[in-house]
Image (cartoon, rainbow, N blue to C red; front, top):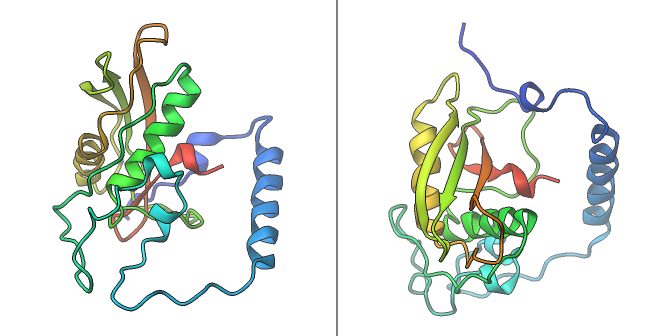
Length: 192
């Protein structure tokens, strides 16, 4: 019988559970209240995950595929320069947003499915300029072990993560990758 990863395995009961449920319910209500979406312009590729990000983490204008063309899975968009960060929380948030912006065809931003394909966890250590110094796998998934390498590759595409010299050492952060059945991930940092 195949092993199936669940988010429940990582979180467990805790004081944040009611707050997460309330936030989830409010997001659902707000999205239901939004009006109809305008139609996409002809010749454009819709990338809702990238459009939802702050401007500084979106790919630079003109760096996308030619009109009517879909970018290849192996290509990564050129990102705007990252901001300097001063706290661990700011670093994790900016890194998660850059992961999505750098990997638009490999991510999803919707609701996390109740059963996930895999949940690798990485600890990323940075140089002062925010480039990747070292990546350590904290948790290998029980199945679909190739998702660990997919997550590592996504981190390298998203780097650098901003000047971290205003933060205390060590300059590192941990990210959990929530992979769905299509082998697309959502950084757990953005799932709140």
